[in-house]
Length: 111
Image (cartoon, rainbow, N blue to C red; front, side, top):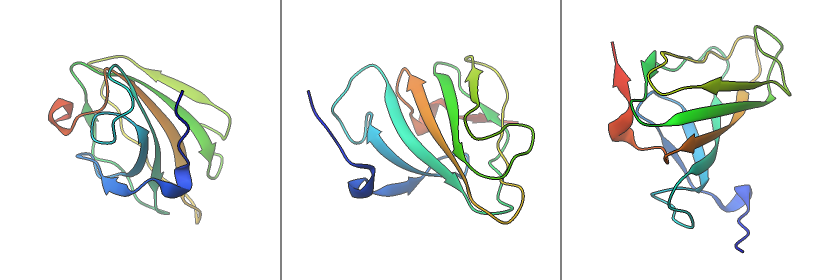
């Protein structure tokens, strides 16, 4: 068993434009078949509309203002489903993003 702290995770920008702090995944190690990260969008920021051919994702909304989804909601995104996020209001949007297989920049496709 391995325990990692979000406070120690270094951030990087994904291909779609969100900033993530990955706890486990391909770049950070610790697991081979999935990834888990906190993704953050600044107020008014949006990701670029995209899909993943291989990865199935689950987003869990940690906090942000209530809009179409609310804190405590989870969203299942199957491979090939177009999606994007937007932080509305004056607070950042934070989500927990879980991917199987693990997130890779090369598995992100745009219009």
